[in-house]
Length: 396
Image (cartoon, rainbow, N blue to C red; front, side, top):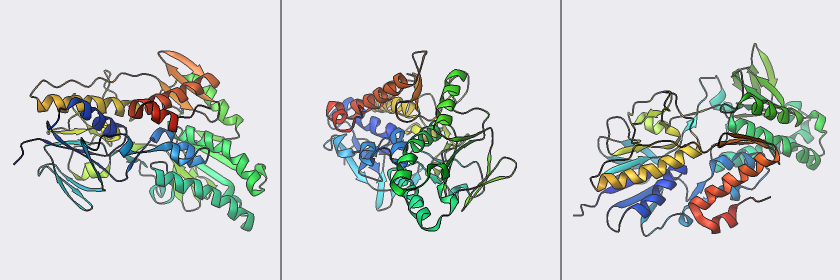
């Protein structure tokens, strides 16, 4: 019977795919048996999903076959959904079988956090996967088609809940798309209303006042109706109730207000803080020296004791560190502490517009938009080299 340790990676998002790729390089032949489990046979680029959701880009630019990213002679890819994680048994229950492990990496991504807003989970759409953005895009087009038949005004009213990165990037792209939809469906643009609603007093956390004001001016110039500092109190089948009872009748509500821990992690019995698992300095789950939790479901604190936001940037760095520590643990060596290195922050504001802070310097407008493209291209290069950059990169 083989004594080779079994490593199971759950999820092929940013953290999972980087863990798998680095393990290919870190581990020697026959040093471990590595299995990557993912619901789909593709990896999707979450930070790009707002564009196909709005209809300003194709879905193909947002996904990459996993077979192009890993060496299937070194990594065993299992296409299946995870149903249950059993830490005490060292087993993972899949929809079509069971996997045992010696070392587990949980990189399943998070789930929408609705903060208990009545009806939000039932009636709002979210930008979380390839299938979800396909639904949003087709739903929006369907509303225009229906309006031409029934003239129901709420079909041309769109509400985006949340003005963080996802909300602002999506609403900006949608604002760019709406004029083209109006022309395609012969709809008067004056009849279309696009709202962005945010409960916090300021949008876009992580940016200073100057860049936030610039971003809000861009949104206003696109015709977006901003409701900042106004919470959504309820979401229903025909719209939302905000603030002190203002009712917005809208056939389309897209929620981008937050992320929390994947329910599978909570169900497994891991201790959850602020909707995520507070991992140790080596990214391990509390009480388990053989289970790593990375990505959206992990909680990592900065030197001031505040949690880092769950971004693609931190998930990628966690994946690299996780792979390194797995190799070190197999070889009986001291693990390496995870330290997040913040490279900068970029938020897209639609075609030719963005804001950015890179190396302490502020950028806005067209130059920031080019930085956003550079960030996207760099990620493609990291996971797939020049061939993937040429295939999926957006240069114009």
